[in-house]
Image (cartoon, rainbow, N blue to C red; front, side, top):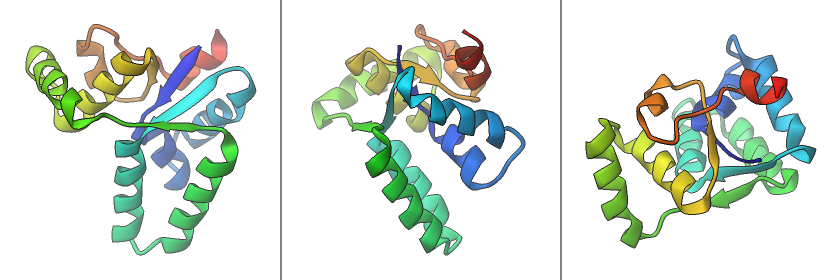
Length: 133
């Protein structure tokens, strides 16, 4: 299964939040799944770490992405029309509509803790659901 890792999965680990261990196990399952992140997620994580002046964490995160085998996918400006339609049809904010559109364009399953994705036709899977499958 090809998985699109949402921003909140990585932030769980980087910010050592409640589900960090579960999120880490998912990312370690790279041999079992093809893992992807959107360029928007990379930028969002970078912004969050930059604002906190966690430059070393950002540098380490980027290094980890580069050597992990996680593929980075993006939308073209031509895809923004589809993203806007998705946002309006399913009452999604920019971040979530971007992820849904990337997932649709690249035939990926969204992995996230964000229940807002449940409003989209493709839905989402949690790390626990992926790990128990």
